[in-house]
Amino acid sequence: MSRLLEVKDLSKSFIIHHLTKKMTAIETINFSLEEGEFIGIVGKSGSGKSTVLKSIYRTYLPEKGSILYNSEKFGLVDLAKLSEREVLYLRQHEIGYVSQFLNVMPRTTARELVEQAVIEMGRPKDEARQAAEDALTHFELDPELWDSYPNTFSGGQKLRLNISCAIVKKPRLLLLDEPTASLDDASKLRVREIIERLKIGGTTLIGIFHDLEFMDGLCDKVYDLQKKIVV
Amino acid sequence: MHDKPILQVRNLKKQYGPGCADCADPANRIIEKNHCPKCQTVYACRNISFDLHEGEILGIVGESGSGKSTLMKCLYFDEAVTDGKAFIRSYQGGQTNIFEESSQQHRFIRNYILGMVYQNPILGLKMDFSSVGNIAEKLIAAGDRRVKRMEERSKELLEHVHIPIARMKDEPKKFSGGMQQRVQIAKALSNNPPILFLDEVTTGLDLSVQASVLDLIKRIQRELGISMLVVSHDLAVIRMLANRTIVMLNGEIIEQGLTDQILEDPQHAYTQQLVYSLI
Image 1 (tube, one colour):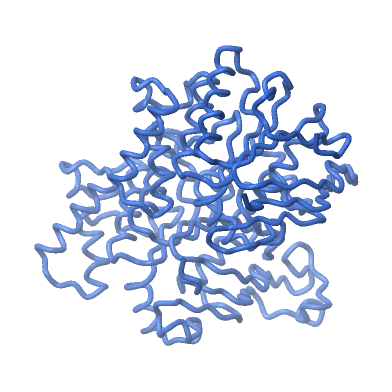
Image 2: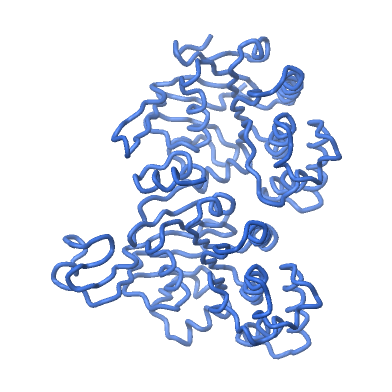
């Protein structure tokens, strides 16, 4: 196994101008991840779990510290300082992000959404079509829904579509941002099965879940944000 | 991934008015927003620099009067810049400042390298020509003389933007706003430009028409790989289209970054206000 990601002394605060206030979200976070591992991040609501993931994905601008990532394309890079263009490349080819929320393009069907993820990587259209069908089948989205618009999907369906969009790119690192929030127990179980399959397939994962039971036996290690230790 | 940007803009400046002792020196300028209260000079664009890369959609947001449309007009040579440089990769190897070229060369660049879609279709279309004729006009400007081929190309483009075949010979004045905008996009695409400028193209369109225009723009990027500069005051439009975004205020770039970062972690006070206003 080789090291895929190392988060070193990562801190992030937000300056809220209209309140002339600085709010600290996370401070000096440290953990690392080997290829193929699954790390869970736990902590109470508001402890900064999402901030960690969003800083890695660069939706948030990290303030201090480094996020060393071993990229297939660029070699060892610091995600905290990488150029926007390179971050975009990694998002298209190497790092995926799944949340419970769906970002839809108007009038784009579920099938098209997954296809586009492949086309963005520079693959031909027919290959994209096949890959999209495979992903949607694999993640058990009812074929009757493939050609409808996702705005009307249930929470579980949206999530499976989100995962399909991320997985169809075969990312090396997948960030899961509370993917089971607001799902019923049966849907949660299906998500668990999906994650187990991804793990067997060799994907490296970082996940945050608010219910610890769900993580039981699934993660290789758990990072506790309050105690700042890996357990 | 081509490393050299397709368009590089460096220190673009545009002012309306001569400037006076109070405002002429950029370092010690006493102005209100972008305007000098003493001599009434307007500094519409101040030191604008950015890169546009191949196949990318770069968003430019800002309120009315922030200078974003002036910037587009300068880049399309509708307005002369006061100062600054711009380089296009496919024009003379990207070595020549296009603002210093002759008006003849400006026409060449407009006809072969750039496409423009204006907020107001009247600026981009001849309302009394047929839609096919409008596209042919651009093709003729780009040196085409074969009538049959031009007609075929026009039909192909109009079909691409979903204008019904039966209405292709109609004049744009008989079309709805959304259809006019789609004809304008077809016209701008007719000479296969590597760079397309879109200025508030969905403003004033109703939601379903707006969705079809946005969908068209995204499709053009995916299928034709055209690089686009998209100006909008609407963050929702930028969120859907752009990978990277520039925020302008009073003629200056105050912030730039990945679009999701601008929306979720805005740094500048003005950008924060803009994001809080998003519905």
